[in-house]
Image (cartoon, rainbow, N blue to C red; front, side, top):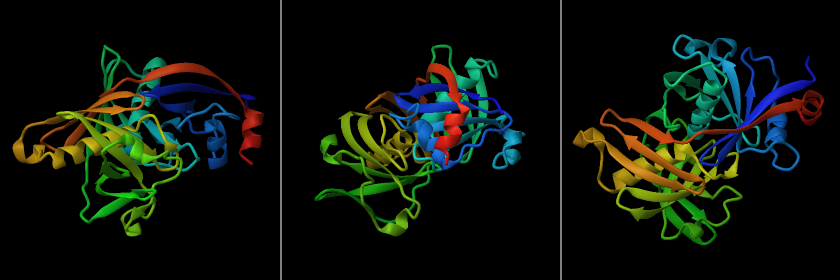
Length: 289
């Protein structure tokens, strides 16, 4: 085995990722290794890891290989597996373009949340078809300290609780997961978004990402926020036949989310590759123990 493993570092609205190209799925990345790589002091640092694998080479993606050549094997910063990451898909697509695997235009990427359609624009922005939101019924409450708020339950292939607040500072430090109830609403944990209004169809958010803590951005979270805000505002494209677009400010930048009458949600924003290098394989083996 090589003593060096290639990596890149990228971000989408400052939601940052370690990227490990591994087309044939031969690099062992147990949770401890992923957590070590994402460690901001002892590793490379990132909110998560993008393991780049050909769909045909990964047991979880083989059935999608006919639709999408590449599989985004996404891991949270603590090493746990996640279904989907919207900012991660954009950065994943930018990496494929940089590596010469794809060109500007449309492509498909396999994820645990299904096959996602992506458009690489000439201006550098990347648009991702994020699928449809599911809005489970039932009341949900999230809390920070002595404050509690009702939250909208939105599933974007991963679970979200969206709470509208008067001040984003009320979200606290978001180092630890905000408590929620009932526990049965999110048996595997949840991403929690706190939202304030900025202007008509323009909101700002902070997020605690399950398995990562507070991050500078969350793509699926921004989509969940746009859908929850639209419903709060009485807008439902499936009913009106008119697309609903919201600008969503995150700490790391701005995303534009559009929900179409057929329910498909599109997210547009930047994706940047900032560095590339090599990991010492012996260090990684030691870190994985």
